[in-house]
Image (cartoon, rainbow, N blue to C red; front, side, top):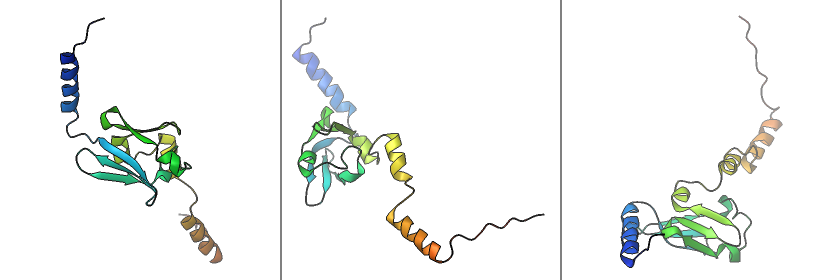
Length: 136
């Protein structure tokens, strides 16, 4: 195995820093109980926040569990040890709050309070009109 020197490590660190220019990274992260939001301060000075109920694995977490967020990987990831939940910062910024299947379930829910109310209103009017078949 090759010997690593302080110079080698410093050079690798600098290469990583230069490669990360322009990439969104977290400088810090915290859970704001009052707002019910995970707040991520980015290295470019911007702030991003999201409600934990949107994120897979964070939906039913307690305030105490949510407050245990850690920034990992030079700011590229967020981690909750007790919840076994991990997210990439670029993914969160792109609106990815879970696996593909999880996101599809959330986006394609067949029921919601608004849909249920619309169905009740439609039902009180006699329901959907029947399709007419045209014969030509």
